[in-house]
Length: 391
Image (cartoon, rainbow, N blue to C red; front, side, top):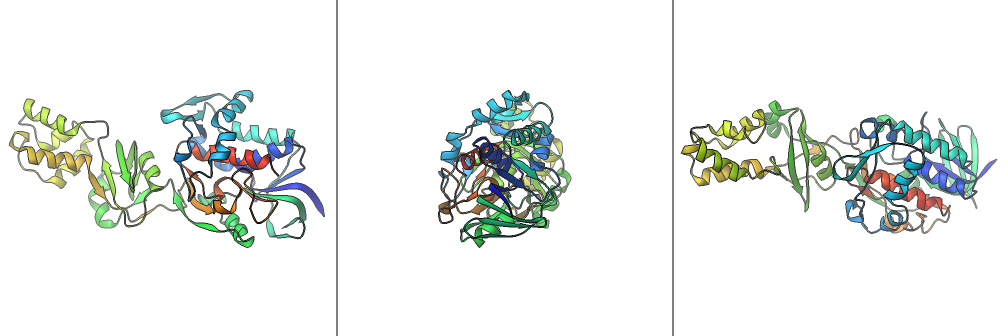
C-alpha cells in the first residue's frame, strides 16, 4: 500500500498552502483532488485577478458560532505574511477599495506560485483522483480509483458547497459526520438575493442600474455598491448583507449613501420650486430609479407644492427603503458557504479534530466565513498554515 505522512484532500487555497508548510517541515505529503486543475476558485476569483487578502483582517469580520475561533490562526499567519510571500515570488499587486488586494496580472500567478512551492517542498499533487472511501485503522486509509493510500494524518480541505459547476460538493461535511464531528447548518453566503414576483415587478425596469447604497439587516450594515438585477438585488453591499440575512427578514436600504437627501431636496425646492418631484430625485438617483421612487411615493405637483412632511416622506423612500427578499441565488452563484464543521470539535491552534487525532479540517469546510473582499482567502492561508505546522 502506498504510504505517506500526510494526505490532503483538496487542491484549493487552504489545501495547497497546508501542503507547502507540511512539506517544508520534512513531511511526505500527497494532495488529492478530483478536479483536472488545482486552485480553480483562485483562478476565477476577483474577475481573474484574485482578491487574495485584505489589509483590514480582524476576527469580527468573520462569521462563526464561535467568532473567536479564527483568532489564533489569523494572528499567527497574517495578511502581511502572505503579502511578503507574494513579494518574494515577484507577483505584483495593488490595493482597491476597503483594503482589498488584487494581483496586477492574472490570478494564475498565485496558483503557479503555490504549485511551484509545493513541488519545491516535496509535496506530490495528484489530480483527477476519485475517492471511494476513507477509514481509520491505526492510520488513515484512503480508498481511491487508483488503489488504497495510507497516512498518519488526513487533512480535509475540500471547501464548501458554493459554485457546484466547479466541482464543489458536501464531501467534507460527510467525512466530518462519519468521524463524529458536529456540523453547523450550511447555507449560501456572499450571494445575490431574490424577490417575490409582486416585489420584483415594479423593479424590473431597473435591472442593470447600480448605486452606492447602505444596506442593513439583523444588526449588520454595509456601505458599498448595490446592483438591481432581473431577479432581485446584487452588488457588494447585498453580497455582504446576505451572510446576515435570514428568511422573513427585511433589508433597510439607503439608495443614496453619502448624500444628505433631505438637504438636497430642500435646497432644490428653494432654488427651483417649479421642478417636478421626479426630476428633483433624478439629481440624486439614476433617472430610472428616480422614476420608480417617485411613482411609489405618488406626490402630486412640483417641489414648491410639497410641504415638509411630504419631502420627509420622499426622503424616507430613498434612504429607508424596506424590502423583504424571499431567497437567494443559492450555491450556484454563492462565493462561499456559511456554516460547516463545528469549531467546538476542532483545536483552534492546529485545526485538529479534538476526538480524532491526526484528522484536520481547514478552509471553507470549517464554520468560519469571512466578509467579501479577500477575507476568505486569508482564512484559507491562515488555517492551512496552522495545520501545516502540526500535521
